[in-house]
Length: 440
Image 1 (spheres, rainbow, N blue to C red):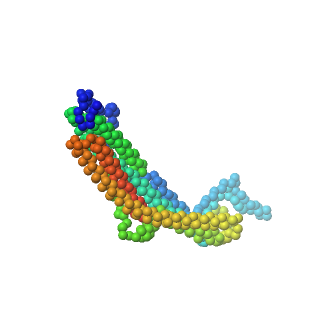
Image 2 (cartoon, rainbow, N blue to C red):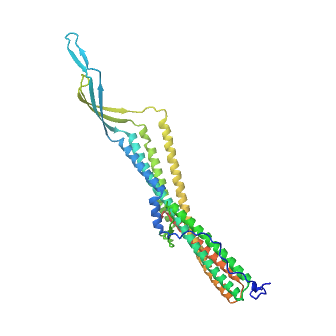
Image 3 (cartoon, rainbow, N blue to C red):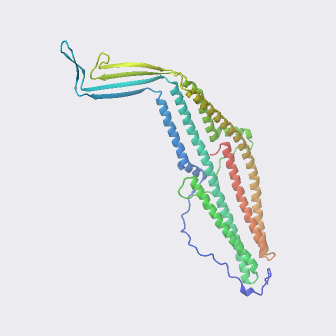
């Protein structure tokens, strides 16, 4: 029978020292990862993320469509050439005189230069207006996508910071458990300890080593998530200190912060641009009912003229078109545009209500998380102090190592909670910055 803290008749059968884990093939030591700041991560994501690249190309596409629409309201000049080959000249013989008149050559050519000037083309003007609105929507869409991407990158970045903090907590707990095991095992070998303390200390060390491996796995996954958000083909490391833009003043009224968010948030701006485009489109419905006038001028030259068509000449025309009946196309188009404006207005109003809720909630969450962080840090400090006192008491022989192990576990849990509270506080600040439009 083994007595806690005393000698044992089976002391000769002392357990072997801590056995090493089975040998495994470890990978070669990798080069240190590149460390980047949050600002650098955001810049890289904006430069190389495929979603942003596609959105930018949509702007180029919208610019091209706008150029095409504007071309329809500008004059156009077109030249044509025609060459005709006949089997022989065409002649007309006077039956009285026998004289021959050439009315068609075997080789004929004709050139024409046509100038078209739109004079009154309301439908074209409406098309240009809609193309401008589409271009503005593409620009606003890039800003909205950049905002969403920045939020994703920032959360992935903070995830790496949290994972690194958890690795440090796990390593500190492992180092404390190793020191405790070394002391318990030394006491056992010196004949003043007992096997139960030794086994419990080793079990706690093994548990902490497993915890270190788990946190390192989480860190690798967090870095992979950050690399995916940055569209990077290699893993990156982050700096421990995260610099976020300044928060709105605590003395600032929530209503003012909400108004600021409605002005600055990219997603709200995108919805406002969409509503503006839908409103313009509906206002331009009159162009579908209006006439349009086009002026055409034509200069020509040919090798053989006639009384009605000389060899050289020009002509001008005015073409007036007035639509009377189209089978209901314009009526259907009016209903489509009315529905689009109503939808855009409803989405914008819903977004504005959501902004107000997000701002109020974000302010409250920041305050609560700050309180939680303060309490968690104080709890971690006290837990570390309790672990130190328990270790001193055990080394003095006043307690068993149950108190030490329990205190070390509580300290590890308290440190973990403090790390989680720090991350929650940063996330709350990020949410507030996103809600008020101050990030990115």
